[in-house]
Image (cartoon, rainbow, N blue to C red; front, top):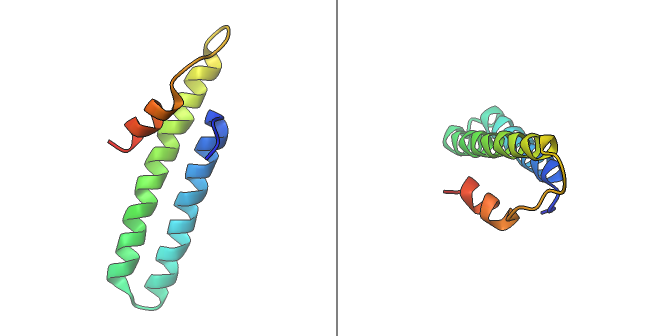
Amino acid sequence: MSDDPHQRAAEFHELAAQAHRAAAGHRDKQHHRTGQEYSRQAIEHANKAFQASQEAIRLAEQPGEVTWDFPKFILALYV
């Protein structure tokens, strides 16, 4: 994944969209348990996308050069 916070947020949004599409496909086929898992995964990705978007906005609003520990930020999303 990208080091750019805006690109990272977009990638999380795409992961969420993919999981939503997969969940919808499984619901159409009456695979409810699998569909529920994809829905749960989609919600997790959507939440991470929102957090990454908020961080990108916060960093964009800071004056001057932005330096931050990107790997530590990403790890924080998964804890």
